[in-house]
Amino acid sequence: GTIGYFESTQAATNAANIVGNSTDTNSSSNLILQVNSGTTAQSIVRCNGNNDTVILNGATPAEKARFLAGGGLAFNGDTAAANALDDYEEGTWTPVIQGTGSNNSKNYVTQTAHYTKVGRLVTVSYRIAWNNKSADSGTAIISGLPFVINESTASGGAFVGNNLDFPANTVVATTETAESQQYVYILVGFDSGTWDNPSTSFFQSSGNIRGQFHYITNA
Image 1 (tube, rainbow, N blue to C red):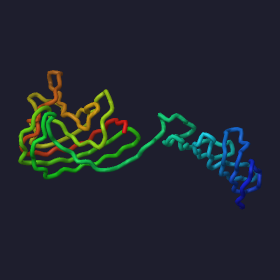
Image 2 (image 1 turned 60 degrees about the horizontal axis):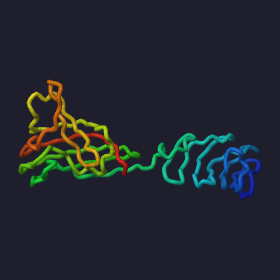
Image 3 (image 1 turned 90 degrees about the horizontal axis):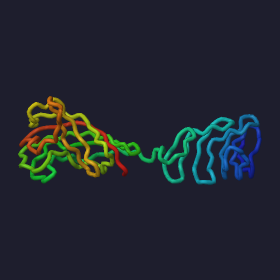
Image 4 (image 1 turned 45 degrees about the horizontal axis):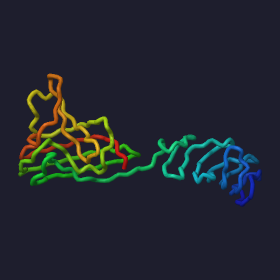
């Protein structure tokens, strides 16, 4: 095949063309990278007048992916910015056990955590072990999340631990996100049908907790 630059759509046989000022009726393209199968133009990449970059295939052509000018990747003809994947990130964070009123001294034996962020959804996992913990005040929380929580409906997660002071009659326990914060509460449910966020005595002088949860952020 040949590679050429043309000022309008060409019908060259078995050629790879860079086409400017396209007359393609399916777009208002300014620049197209296309491959011709026989004399049929099959667009591969199209840079539109609105500065989006579109990936297509077939003679129609059918849109498969679009890099929006404002940021984000949309699929299969979707052009809505709200539906575009605009971030993917992996990393670590430092989990901390404390109270909403204070974070006093303690010795961390293990303090590891990871996160994956896909768009606005953040999934985190953590493992914490400690000893020689001084008394904190307020409600028991796990802090240090990598992004600020942005959801009015609290989401939970699973955890397990040892030497944790569960309130009497607890039948289920989870974590509860705190709106506009970078921490989660401990949330326990009782067999009477109520629930509660336990105080910092939940974390005793030594113990271990590990778990996973997800939340929504605007970061």
